Each structure stands twice: as structure tokens, then as C-alpha cells.
Length: 129
Image (tube, rainbow, N blue to C red; front, side):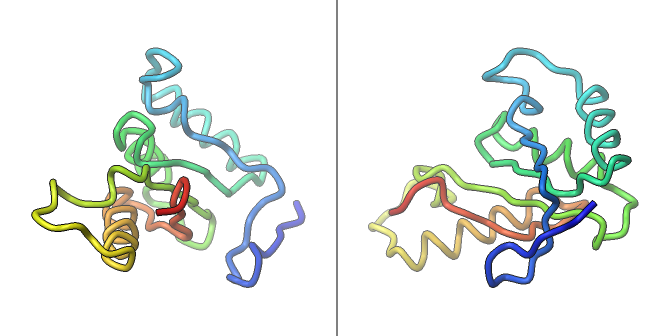
């Protein structure tokens, strides 16, 4: 499979990306983690190594399932792209308004710590703040 660079980032992505929204098990109905893990493994077997997820998918469940499926693999074998919902930038209700810089910093930190088994390659906001 031919991989591509993501913009100027140097991050390598497959031409097909597996979206993990349904693995959160909320919006699309119940889904078993073992079925999601089997799906991820099948994609990897066919050379698809880029995964799109977000903290809002099952309130972090999709990211955790993805981390479980990728556990034990070499880090260079996969690329994870995640997003954060705008109202989730702050860890708790702020006592003062957060600056854009503070919100962006928290967004990156929260994306990186959730999928512990396989660190995040590219955090994105869902839309600007």
C-alpha cells in the first residue's frame, strides 16, 4: 500500500482511514469491544494503519478500544488522529475564561493521555474557538 505524508507534518497516513465513531458504542448503538478490536486488526492486516477517533466517541471509549487493539504493536505501525469537542477543552468548569492558548494546550494534553497504549499523532479541534 502506498502511504502519504499528512501536509507538512511528516506524519505518514494510509490512503484509507478507519473512522472509529461507532466503536464508542453510543450514537450508533451497542457494539462489543471484541468486535471493534477484530475490525481494527483486520484493517491492519490489509495495510490500513491510520485511525480517526475523537474523545466524544463514547466519551473516550473508542480511543480506549483503539489503544487496546494496538497494544503490543510497534508504534511506527499506526497513525492516530483525534479531535476534541469545543466544550470539552477545560478539565473542569473554569473560574475564569480560558485563553485560546490554554484551551489548545489542554486539548493536546487530554488527547495524548487517553489512548495510553498508543500515543496520539495528530490532535485536532472539531471546530475553532
